[in-house]
Image 1 (cartoon, one colour):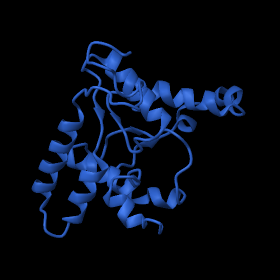
Image 2 (cartoon, rainbow, N blue to C red):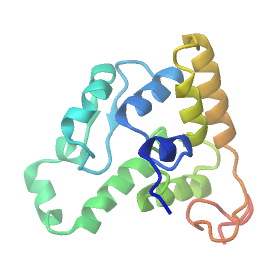
Image 3 (cartoon, rainbow, N blue to C red):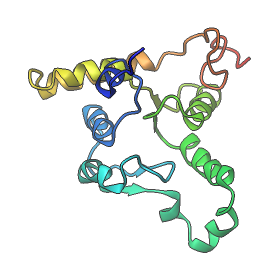
Length: 181
């Protein structure tokens, strides 16, 4: 079988959001330029230059390295799982959590925690990457108001708690809304 092209994978919703796509989704939802955004993780595919469009729109981007002193980070430096735990705490307790890579363990754990303990008061933004790809393909024919409307509808539909299908993450999707098992 021949390999699938990156363009095809993106259309199918199999790729994480790019920084540009994440910025557009946030802007489409009405997040303002002054919004503080915590960036979990540390390695961006393609390097920091890929973040330029995002940081142009949202310059108040912070990481654990920005929030903690080198001395506070030192005990965690050689333990990647402990560094990830710092990101988990920051994301789980954030006002809003936006998932850009739905396949990551961090996003599964954070969204599950927020579903179970958030009681509906801890929004988790779950963009449908497949629908977002379709919206982006219309970028030459869609106006900003139409874009905002489609983004809001996509996110609203992602807010629903769905029952977990076979082989799905117990951390991300409870078996039923009342139970995590």
